[in-house]
Image 1 (cartoon, one colour):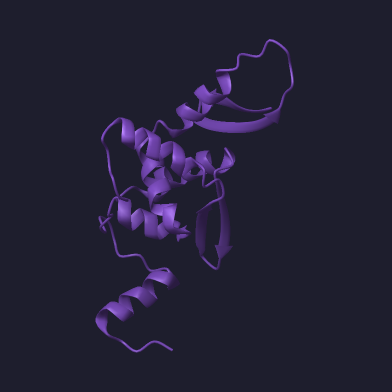
Image 2: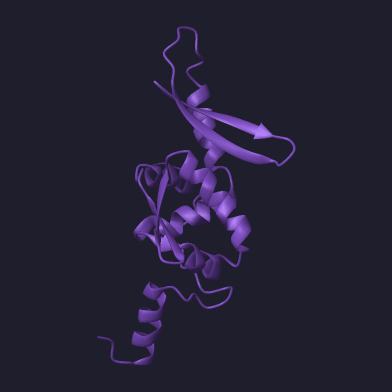
Length: 149
């Protein structure tokens, strides 16, 4: 059985998740689902997951879409990554994230259905500065009608 353990340090208010294999009798069968729901119970993390629903994105792109400061966004990404939902990769100065546990979207769909929430994926518009990652630069040139080779 995989248990997601939540540890909170009061000095830095940093939340870290450790995935442990524990097979003990008497373990509360509701502890693991409760920890999962706690992990997802944050608006910024839900927004991040929705942005990553269609594939990987760079941190600067998410920052431009959500309007959050990079440090705050990185904290939320770290929580999701340490819990095993996301993986990252570095390409030059850019860090890209992608979802590696797509079953999380089934959980989100169930939550949205219970709340009569979004029937379709939310549309995010740029709230911050324009993203300058290579992926976005190509998109911006195409939108302007520039020829890209």
